[in-house]
Image (cartoon, rainbow, N blue to C red):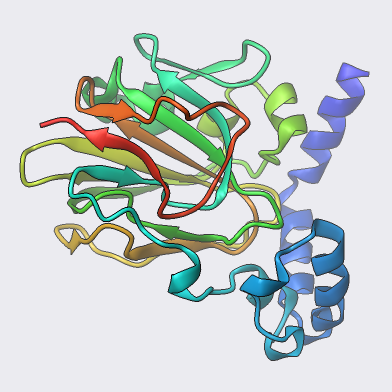
Length: 259
């Protein structure tokens, strides 16, 4: 059964299949799928426009929402969730390792690149999975300057529970973007946007050297995926009630920066 599951995941990740999927979801004819999609994934109707206002299923998927629906914690030192989603994992990195599912781990150096890994060893991290029902725009967790941004090519394995349980080093093998930030006090954190099956594009809205305020929109996924947030050692204190498997919303406080 495990071999069958692995074969299925590899088949689904084929680039040709992804391109067909992207084309189909971007077609105007895919508008007819929006209402069934809302019912299937139980998308909150209070957070969407009239379904007929979207140009395609892809347009619906990357939809905006009214800012009043995502209040942002106003405290100066508060770090907020950059996305809506489920916490797949969280905790302190064990030397160079981040834990995934069923004792499957991956290294910070694999995820970020060797040159960046030293800044984040023993630091705190969140792995947040965005399901098909979620709001898929990405926001700034804390006010800071972009010091580096890079695109890392890779596969497009699904990042759901099946993919996480089947593919070793999943997040270090999928295509992704890694963005590194620094606060005025010299505190550093990184935000990784991980591509997945059906993700036609990972869009970013900033340039290196730019200052970005907390909660400002910094990008979006055009289909479901994962965001990994990492902090330098001893600069971040998580909210004690945060647990693996917990649903969180963009703007919700997830911790505090320690100066």
